[in-house]
Length: 146
Image (cartoon, rainbow, N blue to C red; front, side, top):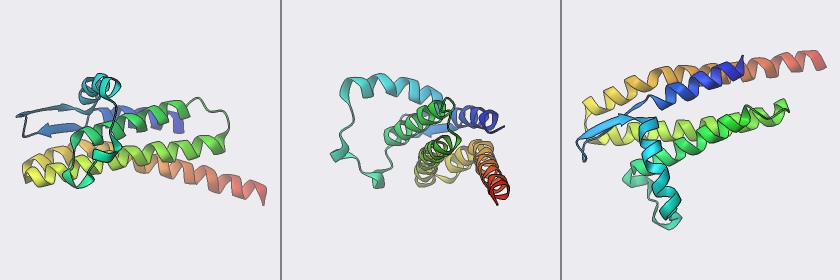
């Protein structure tokens, strides 16, 4: 049940609308991740130049990509306890990425923020569902051991 919710969450995160007023365009998250990956491989990421106050979209997209890779790898982990830890880490990366993009959209205008937040609501709902499923299984295992 958690695996299906994770896959749906990955898909919903991939279709969050990212609008770039500087470039007079936009797209969905997965498109930006695909376009940004070769640049990251070629140039790398200079940690010293990262400034979260500037709301760099590249950083948010990179965090989203890292979170997705962590979540995909967590699907193949056999031990449930380790998988839950990696799921929480991956979800944290996705949430930080989404909040960063929403913050940038807020600074650029309310209509951009409304579109970005609106496209991310299904992702947020599945984010909550995954946390609920993890806590539900945790409570169930505690009842069995007592």
